[in-house]
Image 1 (tube, rainbow, N blue to C red):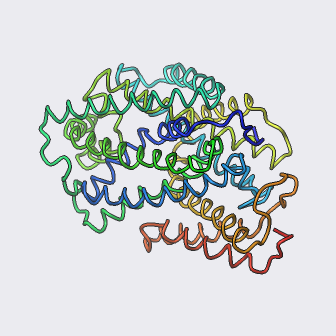
Image 2 (tube, rainbow, N blue to C red; image 1 turned 90 degrees about the vertical axis):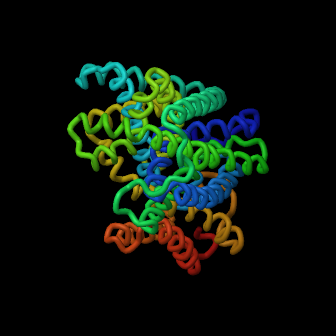
Image 3 (cartoon, rainbow, N blue to C red; image 1 turned 180 degrees about the horizontal axis):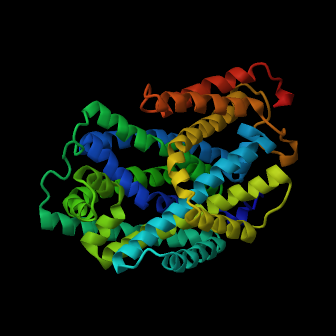
Length: 447
């Protein structure tokens, strides 16, 4: 699990790009496409997506080069270039919480689509009958290995966008194209500046998360030049195709979805927010069984990726934190078991609330790795660039831990008190400044 990728297990770039594209083309991404365009208008929303695209490409490419060269997953590489061995256990806890939390949230989104379509009662028995087999399916698919996951994801992405295209054309023909590609701000009382800030913050918060997620798969690349098309494909799938589909889906289905939520007792404002946040309901209302199939294709492939990422984090946590070796089958089984506990233990609300801070943390984390690898160890020569042995890595890299805590803490505080609407703009520069400053006084052999 934590060993370098052998040469015979390296994969062609389309396979890796297919995995990443499959992971990012999800219901939450469709929701983000709706959110950014409804708050900022279509044109400004897509401008925010374009800015996030450039930044995310940079992060995915730079982190991807590190894990490609090392042949190790991001949690293990973070031992050397961010936190130290014991320190990386903290990163693994954060990463496992995020990935397994997203695994649980994805299962719930898919389960809600099934319950909504078939009109099932939301009882404990029904939920157990849905979520337990679902978790077993994710575990089995993840155990097949990255090559099988790549094939499934590639076909699923193609099927997803074909079905989404069909749905959008159908809805557009029914209601008329109108100003689908030029509609303005759809949320009452929001100014263009406020709307653009929300759109940019929503889009850019995925940059660090996507880079670290992709890094678990870029290590399988056959050659370094493959990282450019891999990073391009993943970000195009996210910020172009999925965002546009999410925006158009919400635009064409908005009236019908709002009416549905108002029929459940919501007022118009709450129903409007619910319509934006629930693309799955829009898909089922507008497309029936085809909408349900789209939900399945959008989430099933994502769940495999979340399972793999969460399992790798648990394996690194066991090794770095407790010196225990967790086999792949055990790690995958444990990740899905925790996911079930998250669903039925009411933990998913915590995960949802943590996502903003998680976006700040992962942006700082990714910046830390880039600055350490390319600047401190690369340009300055303070410490080795290249992992010779995991045993040689210091227990805790306090420079990295402190830089992450300070940068994330200040950025989160500024965001919470309303002084900064896009915390990414503080987290990344602070990390990039603090870590080199903390490294000036360290001797090369100490780091």
